[in-house]
Length: 326
Image (cartoon, rainbow, N blue to C red; front, side, top):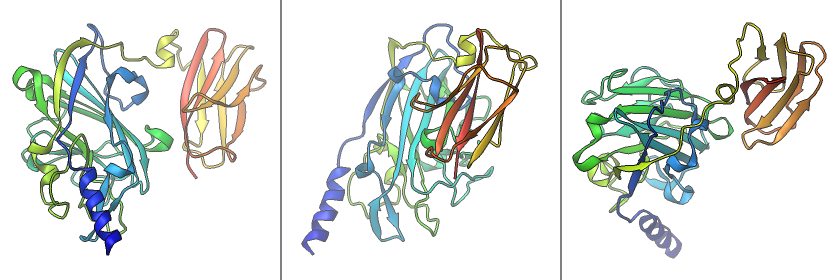
């Protein structure tokens, strides 16, 4: 009885705080952000916040029991004269369901973005599908651009990017409220009864969950700062001389891989080499002075996640991403 009371009190105290406030840096003049769900291009300076640990994420199981959920996400944001850009990287998810159609898909992972309440929310799925509530004011490909990569986050979880026309959310003095979170599916029944959002603080009785996370009063406030941020990173291929795939080809099959992948290439110079690194930059394979036009990578000793295969030949470099999933 005492343990139960202490647990309930602890759950309430953890989330009993005011909504967060964030500054969004301005992009350097001439910078272009491509909405392609490539999170690696975002410098840390644009990091906004995260679901920090399991202690601040809760789900309601079977309409009765609040418990911690193994779901975490990081959010980055920036803006220019025309748009506000957001990037979301999923760090962990104990039950990953990479599905989703063109309308709201029960039982599928998503990120949920609320500009002003539940009726105006829209959803992005790992498949790239976009779903909008009927009152959502943003028109796809005009006011709103989106992209998703089902394995673009940490350890093969999804990543997302979206941009919103600045005029729609700039608000008074360059401030606006916006909620970015998820209705993450963590129970076997597939109930959508928790909205876990970055910077959205839960106030009041946790049993009163019908609308707290869909109420704009609880959303964080974003301010468009006049501070200029760093350049958005370019990919390794863009940093070097562009290479025509007709002359310098790198293919990986299968991808995703669960055991052994065949890495094949065409027309490299005699000095060609292949390097495979994990997401932290650690080498897991390096083969110099390649002979022939293919090598095999046996991945059985490596953990699931994303890896990068780099083919180098003189000053030419091509990089491909490979996902290991067992």
